[in-house]
Length: 287
Length: 245
Image 1 (cartoon, rainbow over the protein chains, first blue to last red):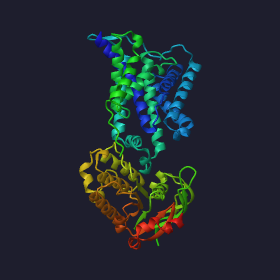
Image 2: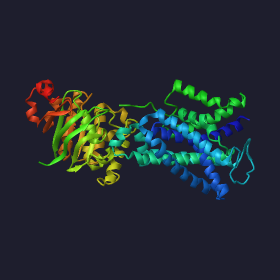
Image 3: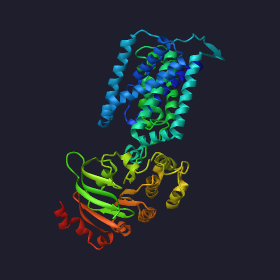
Image 4: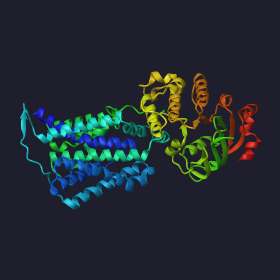
């Protein structure tokens, strides 16, 4: 029973690790918490649905195209909504992201209604590995998030664009006078956000169903994972997501399932009190 | 006269008031020019305006004879300026190597340097201390080492003019002497230097030209040797300063 719950928690953790990393990256570069992240996941999932179910494309192709479209859409959203407010401070941008989230969620509701939908996938039968009962969608979720995490780690630590993102996160005005093109880095950050959030949309859609609140339902867990791991740390986002996912599921063994959402909130409170930089974050040096 | 930088009647500031109230000066190619003056005279604002962090309201900035007034900070770096701020002048949460890589990659895009040569022989010779610290987080370096790293990053882009904002601020006397020696060595490689300094005596000793600022204007533009003979107290606070206001 515990092993099965732990495995289910790992799957949940793998799914929320992608938007948790998206938040971490964006917070580093643009210095605001993007509360539209849940709704973007939803919209991306519906984009995949449109290509996969309505146009009949294979799910993988639909997911890749939707990821690119989602990134391009976010660049457009940035230029229309966030860029004009860039100098107005984090709170203004955060409120704007809340508004954007509401708009996107209701657009999804307007076009697709409240009814639950699903991707065009062959039904896979659950199978057993020892005492564990699992299905192929769950393994895809773990594999895909691990792969994307590795790609993000390599990008941030080994590639010039990743270094530029970290430089802007560290010291934006110095980055400017060191010749870093901030606009280009911002575009890349949104594009990567689009990929991660579309990935999360596909995984949630495969694990559960598509409905207008499918992304927003994960919002607290996503933020808890990013903060627990340490904003700015991709490894932290991954580990934070796994801890939040597994502990939320494990809590159902001793608490009514309705209290599951309370677990990430407890993590946020605890980490802010005892280790504000998160598990993998380093105390910021400003000198 | 072969100026690398020329400013004419430059006005700039924050909010509604002007901090720079019509600054005109030039920096001759290959020379070290030091700007001194009392606190609040607009020295640091002038440097920030030059690099594009404070917008120009009136006047012009010519770099190698070309107006860069309309350029943003990144384009000014591409045009040949390099700026080392007084504080927060390295990416503190990144390693020394990563700091150098960022500037090196920019230089490579500018076409100045082949890829794969992050700490060039020239930089290694100028700042030997950095070679053994490549894996150290820049924020964990001492004040002097951090300043050296900031110089090395700025020089990686092969600037025509290196702009330094109080390079010796907060350093021990030993490191202060090292920093001024580094400025001299950098200048000998052919890079012109414009620096703001509070340690006027040490800075003037290595400078060719000196500009004294007061109340957002140039109060005196003379050779460093001439200024060395003057009374700094009189220069900063004397009757001429009041006239400049």
